[in-house]
Length: 76
Image 1: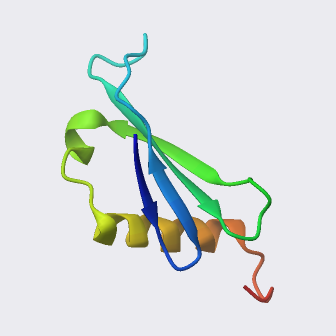
Image 2 (image 1 turned 90 degrees about the vertical axis):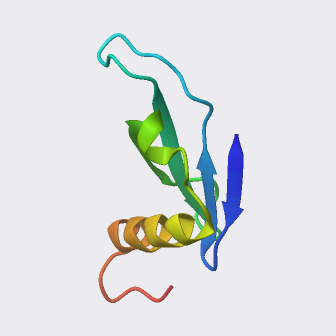
């Protein structure tokens, strides 16, 4: 499991796993904001696509997830 710290929170990658609905291994990428008391947002990807996931990817994922979690006009 990999963990990346970003400005607004933490992005965590799970270990690859198999699921009945997919032929390839999956990996879950989860973003947990600093001020949401453990709540976050996650998305599953093919593990092959995340093999070179790095800090820059974590920053992009966090910014995208942050935009989905925040109500427009609410202070960060």
